[in-house]
Length: 73
Image (cartoon, rainbow, N blue to C red; front, top):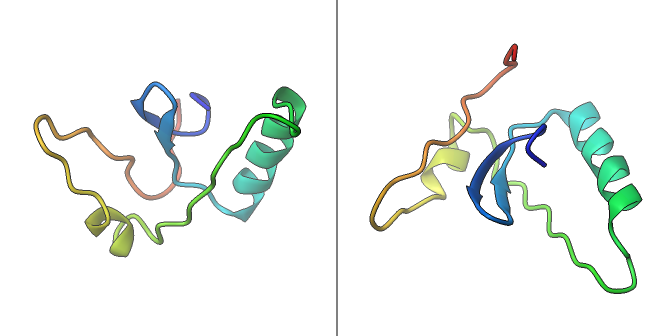
């Protein structure tokens, strides 16, 4: 998950993915999880520049959210 987005907590990540990146993420997750036991939720929050940013409310320290668009790492 670290290669796809930003960790908010140990097992909570925020990712800004296009359709191809989302498919690649799903393929990678299916290789690693036990589909009989494990559960992974993918939630589309919308465009980070729109509703996607407004969906988050932090209490305490606000965590940085990913910026929209491609990033070169």
